[in-house]
Length: 129
Image 1: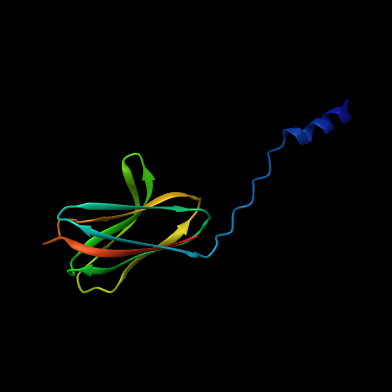
Image 2: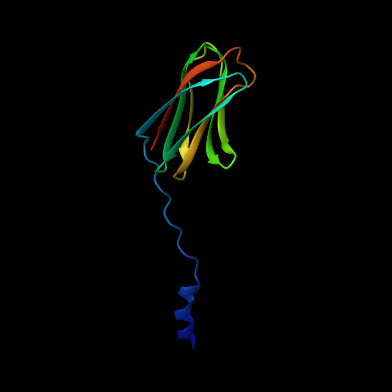
């Protein structure tokens, strides 16, 4: 009877967790341009195929004004922001960085937090894996 219980014991143990994926260096560059109107919001969509680094840079803001941008996850309501940054006039190129922990559909949202005095054009560069 003891032998029978010993044979059943391994079937009741917890399964071994799968290994955590190793993040890869970003190698895919996507560039988006847009014009943001007063109190406006623009959303740019992209997909990530692998766990890895992510960098979003906003540049070429013309005329030079304050813009806010955010990295987010695509959702039914648009873009759910996960991290955001405001870039003030005269500032250096603004950049958000992080690590994507699961492949999926993501977005970058550019919006006016009541700072624009006129529409502004911009360039976004997304580097991901």
